[in-house]
Length: 274
Ligand code: ADP
Ligand code: MG
Image 1 (cartoon, rainbow, N blue to C red):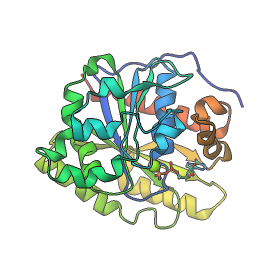
Image 2: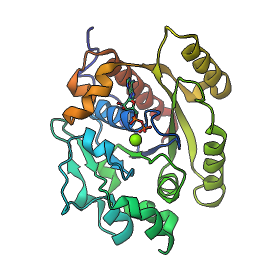
Image 3: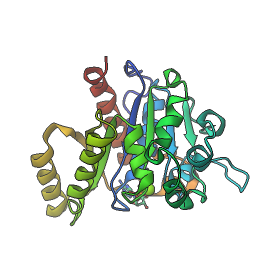
């Protein structure tokens, strides 16, 4: 399959868009979406930072981050006020893409954060101390829970992107997620909005996938990207090579779909920001 528009440069947003990729369900494609949308944006002229906020560190692994027990991670940023600039690392093979990695210390952060001042706004503070005029996008990969780490993401971002897996029970828990977004909106971050819903792991051969896609579109209308991400073996193989599918197999159906989804996101930016 031909790879379309690889040297095309997409319009840059007027100021850095901070997007939290959230869904408290595990295995719905949050990390895969974060990594591949980030890579696709960076490959089209955008300067992108991925923040790995999941203690499991899957996004860091997928982006080829080297980590050992000396590695400074987003944990040190949240708990010890370390500057993001000092811990972000360039992603090998993709210019203009950086990652602030997660290490296993982050597993304790949910508890350690409880006793800190402004515990919900630690990440926002870290972004405020960073010169985000050097970036076009920050994508935050959230853990599969609605705890303090996800709340930190929602306080620090302008937009929430929700990946929804085209499977049975896909919509279960979505109400709770949306209520959490509303709570953060009314108490901590009035500018927060669910800007984007992305349907993932779509299998066009099954009625179920089609039904889920239709149901999500009828509920959420234009918030849902036109592009569906198909189930693709190449997408699931890429992380074990420390790569996004965008570099691992750019012509695969999964890579082409993520490229299209990223293009939609980049072009939607124009109306959103001034
Ligand atoms: P989450 O971060 O929400 O837990 P992941 O992005 O880690 O979800 O995805 C869960 C699993 O599904 C991973 O093994 C991933 O490789 C696989 N996966 C995600 N998207 C696809 C896809 N489009 N096709 C095939 N496998 C996928
Ligand atoms: Mg994940």
